Length: 256
Image (cartoon, rainbow, N blue to C red; front, side, top):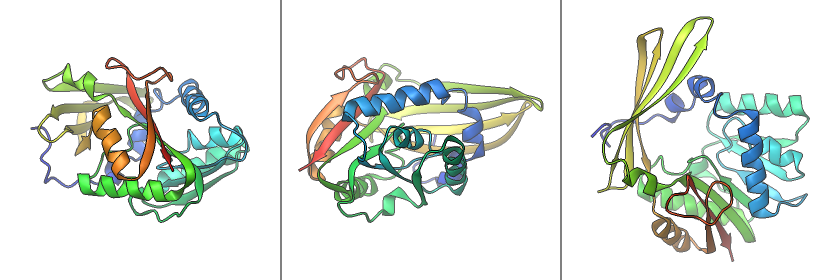
């Protein structure tokens, strides 16, 4: 096992300035534009739609949906990310209501037409907390509102039963730096256990252990129904009908 379930997981150590640095190449303007357009297509986005981006991270999706005419609220527990999001929104003339807060404790009541949970943001807590979060998302939606939840396709991991390593490299004026994720999926509890290493110029600077709950489509759809959702539809990353070989799993579920 790569990361013991009893090891403390601190969100702020995982989603920080290192994250922004190492994911900058992946989360570029083309990628962000495409993902925002995918969400808009899935929802048939209309102007004035009340959208909650939860968590919003550094605002890469929220400000683009706002530019399409949605009324967007973004919530994230990272002060660094919220500051970054507000700065980018101002630079692009986008109107987004960014709020500092933990998505696991939101208390919105029937205030939104859409809740977005994007880029595998669901799964970093224990099962009881995750089920409670789905209930909070359901409560945040007005009747007829929809949840868009995007995560990894677990079937892709079933094809990789052994430890895997994924590396991101950044070269700048200070040298060469690496983010290395060493991960192993445990089929007994449905979690991907990861140790994240940051090295700078050949010297390790820190290691962060974490785990991520992953789901098959039937399991996640069952959780959503138990939380009160209905009409669950599943798609791949390009809005195609979900298949076992899809890169990602996107579920659109509705509050009756």
